[in-house]
Image 1 (cartoon, rainbow, N blue to C red):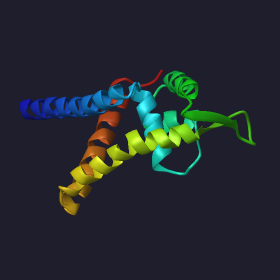
Image 2: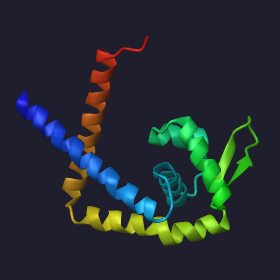
Image 3: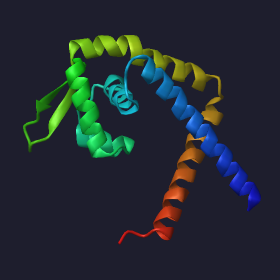
Length: 149
């Protein structure tokens, strides 16, 4: 059991270190962590996202997403456009937002790819598979230990 505890502690430190890398990078450009990840999502795909979809996809609190989107609107990087169904609004990059992504977010995609390509195809697949497995097992343990009331 001690070995498992040590491994989990080391894994948690590594994940925190990775979070810090992204945080420090976002801070250099005046972005909160959540603002960075919203732009990351919008820049990586032409898909239309709502605030709720990003919150669900990236496991951020809805209120935090709402605050970050409001900030990004004020900065001129995104706009909100009403969707035809319901009262959801699509988050869209503005022209300034696309320019910002080209300068700030796209380089992150490139460095992530360069880093991943330093691993073998098998290592990349194994990394994702084992990370997902651990997350699934942790989720299961949390649900069993702290059932929703």
